[in-house]
Image (cartoon, rainbow, N blue to C red):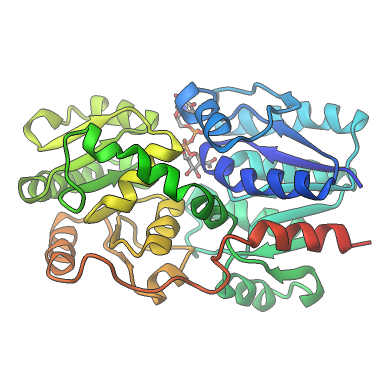
Length: 359
Ligand code: UD1
């Protein structure tokens, strides 16, 4: 059996790592194809190095461009490669544009497609990832869900139950494997901060950072919060461009503004933070696994289990809502909620079981 794993953008890499390690342990042959959607050292190579992901067998080097150009170019270049290296399974993870492009190639060339993180739905079709999730799932032969809500969504959409498997969360496999090493780095101390005495902020969703009113309102709340608690702010390339374009002055806020962090740096900072403010999907899951309070700067989430178990809450982009949620969290214990079922570090093993037992 030959498996092809697709990697494209930053949030894919922590999901790919445990799959590559589990396949290697089992002696199942696999190739890794990197689309090149994310190409900066800090957005890509760092994660391969820290997580011990084998060097990609092929990098399609698509790079920056319009969304349509990026998707079609990935499709064209991947199709060419799969003609010579036709796998038994093409495995895609998450919901980024690379995931969509690869899924369409599999569907159009009759290669079996497995989707890791299937079934998540925000019900917000203006979110680029939501469109990707729906299309990828509709093309998939094997739908590997990270939480029960994902399974429920797929069954409600009429997907046949024999294609759906609740395997748990591969991203948490990576967290479990690397938490001690991340703690040992003491990244917060390198930034001059004490454990539990700072917050962490990440922002990159187009709906927040590309709309002047939304970004200004969020940064207004951030300025207020930072007067009470210093905030570490690793800035995504998209967000950096927008902060400059909207002339938002960060120098008046109590922020530690840093470049995008590697996996260990980010995990260590999340683990020792008093609170996290984010619009990332992955960070909602990681804070849930760590039981760190998380304010999600969005109106919806495709990961409802992070809310049901207690550590995450949706606060949107309006500064008053963010500030009242912040005040409430600061009156609660520093660790809250519970870890969802099967977020136990063994999801990749379950996935390899499913793939290798399918005929
Ligand atoms: C993408 C994913 C999103 C994920 C996020 C994490 C989609 C639809 N979105 O959004 O789900 O949460 O990645 O980072 O796929 N850029 C660089 N260097 C890089 C990569 C990007 O400068 O290494 C620039 C691009 O040129 C572009 C901007 O950042 O101007 C946005 O990159 P892009 O991959 O299009 O989308 P993200 O906003 O990162």
